[in-house]
Image (cartoon, rainbow, N blue to C red; front, side, top):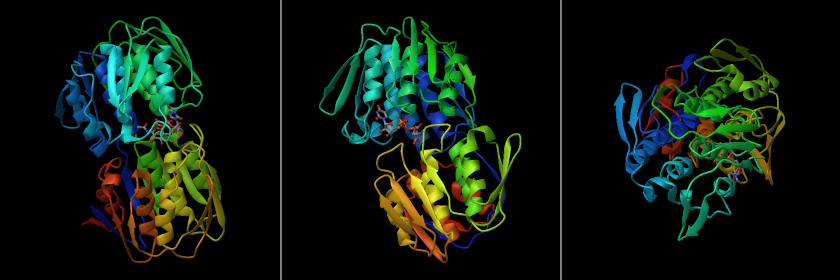
Length: 413
Ligand code: UD1
């Protein structure tokens, strides 16, 4: 699939943000913790959600879609989720917590078929061991098994979002109290805790670095609406500034966007925060800036690629250091095909601003890289063709329509 983006766009108008992908995926998975009716509202229509829905059905859940709500009734009858689905998204690793908690055994293929060394899941596994599970690795699969899960103190060497979420889900049904120390602080972790608590769970202090989970024997049904997507919002904020535009972005929690807002302001954009809205305007030339990705509340790694596109077209040099993921500069090559001047040194990218980007045929290598290329396409001279655009649809609901309604000219081939 390919997307064509006409350059020299100026985005102006109002964009409504969808529900958070990274909150919805774990929340849908956590529905497996209860056998009663769960209703999740405002589920975004994105490809990653479609894969998780198939995974839940594959495990024995019944799903009914009602407008944009999803009703789920679970009974985990399968402890070995389908490899063809698992390999498509890393979030499928989060199935381990609820399956282990409800069935006391789970078998899962390593996500993406990756070796543990290159995309480690060690923090998840160490945490399950601390809760009493025995871990075996056989033929590309991980098996975790426990007679029963027992609360414990778990210290995470790094505040991994996925590990915090997986362990919170397992501990929610364990016997006794679990403490996750050096836990991730991301808003999506807090949202998952709020959802589990809405099912009768007892999770305290999510959003701080020590989360306390009092295990319950069972969880009941619930109706829940996850938070808005701060990365989708951040992407449109950058697109507004990058195109010299003026966007009112609705359905956001400005508190979740502090790092993105700070960097846009530093680069010369005007950002006005309101109750559930943010307005971004470009009021002058883009100033070069320094960015280092960090766990929340630091600058999000999921916004790094979009900022790189934006900073490609300034009159100075910017520096981006990626400290969360080892290998997350794949978009650089593609931006350079559009005339960007970027040098990578280890985990740092030096972006020397150029007076103009030019359209090219480029490839989306992953979700946020695809978003960066869209922004670059809107800024450049000519029409940019982005192949592998299915990556973009993994995480952005109706992105083509949303952008076209505010002045872009984008179509799918
Ligand atoms: C989640 C988000 C992803 C975001 C990332 C960091 C979802 C579905 N995905 O991914 O969009 O980019 O948080 O904000 O919510 N690590 C280990 N061992 C582990 C687990 C992780 O070393 O057991 C490392 C990873 O390789 C990576 C870093 O920790 O370098 C961060 O990963 P993590 O926070 O776990 O990210 P995800 O939960 O996979």
